[in-house]
Length: 261
Image (cartoon, rainbow, N blue to C red; front, side, top):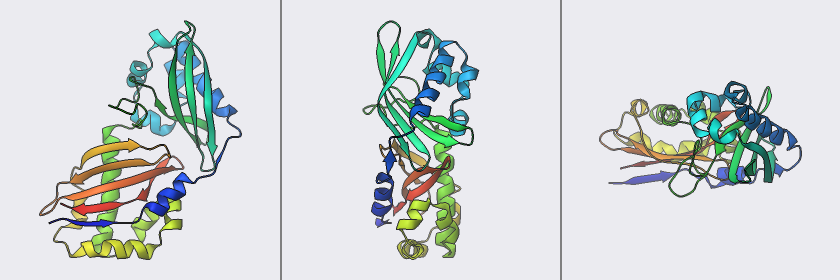
């Protein structure tokens, strides 16, 4: 038996993709990047840490940063240049280009930023076949949050959605979603889409307490984090496809999909 209900994410995701990106005021991003790599060049990883977002620092220990960006290599850092420079209206930004070394070599790099109270901070760094992002195929597809953070995020979403399904009260879950999701998908649509799950003989309020099996993790080019997997509930497994977008340095739901297996 396999029941599938897909809450329309098309409008929400389109809204994210359609964020108006302005290419002004990117000098701060470049300055932050240059100061970050200059600190590493000087073997000052604690100094480099000040240019990282809270999310980055919480999910990537200093030891991992040193391993990903070794002093033996980055002491030869010379400059950085970027062909793509974007600042978005939602307080995020990105640079795509390359890091140039004094020996004449260069490596491609992509950096995502988030604007915090102290200014622009590096939120993700993507390097090919190295360091903070490794994946078989697309070099830039994995965000720099660890497995524990993925699990916490997925469980939190399922706990809130499961409680909504069990009680029929969706307001709390709805307020947990991203503003752009709420602008595109009315509360009534969520209630209609998920109400039929209430008849399934599963204790929905406890599903989110189980350990999820996360089978796929992808950070898409539009900034949407996509997590796919299942919860080992009985008598049916609860499959999920959750999509998130960062708002004010927090991952917020922009797409939800459940299926029973």
